Image 1 (tube, helix red, strand yellow):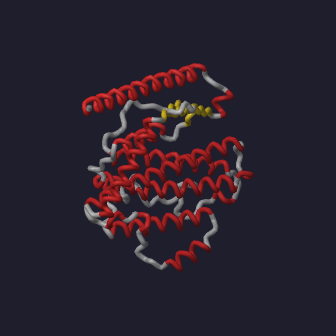
Image 2 (image 1 turned 120 degrees about the vertical axis):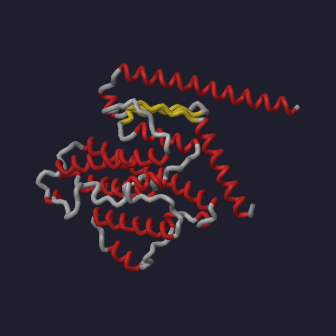
Image 3 (image 1 turned 45 degrees about the horizontal axis):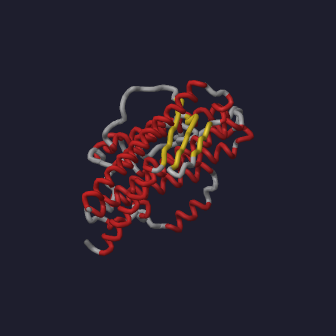
Length: 317
């Protein structure tokens, strides 16, 4: 193993150990109120799970765009540009569930967040409602960026294994048309929120084309069927798969209560303001029961780990 490859492997191994340690030493209990529920389990195929999550976020963005289109009332900004079907989502380029699909969602979420702030005084909803919507948009943007980074890391590992690109970060791949001066001028002359978002999405498409051309990116994100075909054998490690299932389970629903418990005894409980004003006792009881069950399960895991290491050490003596 080459020296540089050894350093990369050692760094990745250390990061995985660190992340696993953080997971084992921290509990997080979320209580969620869902509008609708289904008994169906999440897909076992990681590619389809990604597509499902991107779809959940895209639908929420469209629904919020329709909501604010109505709230604009007689504001002249309600007239959408030609070819635009939604105030917040606008024209979609990527329809898969990979790096570029999630980056595109994050771009529109950030633009929508800024737009709500700009037109706050002209909207017919309350300040708390706007703050809640902005929080939702920022949450979707943050998770989308995290999923995109997770996917990029996976692709880099795949490229190293196939000796392609030497682990070059996909989002750092130069554009096919490297006319940076024109791009800079175009960016400078597009201060409007939506013009900037369109510009950023177009840059994203150019980066996608460059990564595809250099064979650094194995997923086709321009259609659902092509994306699922190219991600059929996608296989995340256990921690990434658990993170993906968790964000799918939470979806875009409101977390009314969240409790985090650290191994040092630090306990933090967050309660949404709306729920705190009109709490439901059975929800409080259910959250407390979930905490107790989680703590008991946590204790059993540590007891099993301690017992395992004791047995290993006793055999060495």
